[in-house]
Length: 578
Image (cartoon, rainbow, N blue to C red):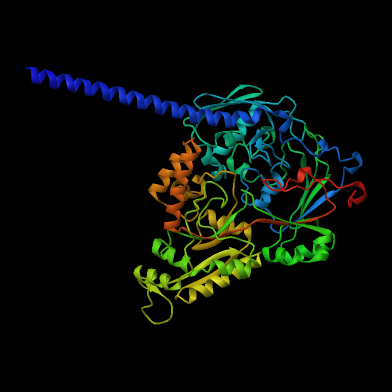
């Protein structure tokens, strides 16, 4: 009896200790979660602590700018014409340059220097302790360019339009997948209720990089009706569309009815010049002021003393710089085997591309994150240029030359595929030829397949390609869901190559709800490793932003987030346009 009693007592004590230990762990876990939520809330609420630092400050606050320095135009040589000025369905960076912050504004935006979210259309923001309820109150002095006040109905309409499955905004809708509902509390107050915490929730609930759409302008009965709204944009921003002469120019004029401090420049003219040589000639002739040149053009012109006397030659890295890649359609008979994709990476001499095509103005990248950001796993080294290793991998994958015609084949299919590129950019044509020559040495033919940009985008969305050369623009902190989660490989999602990896999906989903930056970074480093091993893309390079700007413009600063033309002005004696 005594032995049994002692054994029972010990068992009870062990159970009690285990219960206490589990309770302690739960308390610690709850504290960690609270700490993480506090960090998130602090990050959110920092945006509202100092209204004087809002992004609505403009050159008007610069004492060095005299009243007579108001005027002139900025003529931007745009080498690709956008297909739409609809802020929800836009597909290309050129559209973003035109509409974002010029025509459309969000509840908040990133400060160009400290990279923190700052209020724009919102007056205040309240985040619940669990991070699941975000309440915005609108300023009482904001209105659209037609004079109509901005209300909670417009915010609600914008959200509902984004998530409408018939609206061509799948690239945005995925960021709102964990929103349970959005409530209008009154005419100036709206509350987002989330199912789960999300580390970028304030950014997307605040419609940063999207803007608030006026319901009375954009409301629709049929989603396709909204998709066809490509021109005549109406927003709250400091500029309005004056006209769009298709194939020639897009002209924005200053919004004299703007609710905030007005920029100094009266017009921004986006002149469509798709030929890069002609664009530089327009710059030299005084027909354009601003150009994002090809790397080889930047290398040549920035060494020209006479050119530098008239133009600023600016080169800088920011989190928004793009990375460029070859995308392999993973569903294709050619590229569903990761050994083949890795072999192709070994066949592409990226150092040669950078040296000869980019004049040294780039860096090899290994994954989808900003190379100087914490998400980028710097322990990962680029796969080397190694044709011998590539041939071994191709042999192992069953792609061999069975008929002696110099071209590898498998099951009767020759290894000959189309490499889709942009037709209006000669740089891509040169790169495609270089890649084809490299692959030919291993018994593969990559046939350049050029398309005009708008058609190129549609073929990507419809998965009508075998391989393609393109690039993705960056953000301050990346959420890979849009481009890499398997759910985005169907419909018109942005996972164009059909990458499908269960561990990657799990990491992407977990990272979204991980508020602790350190833990989230570890997850993304592992995700980077997976992508590196699987090679759904051959990551080519990333390069700094490069631009030429006429020196008559003043208050030009290179911020952490790049250039902000809303701050620029031209002294009255240097003004070219009246």
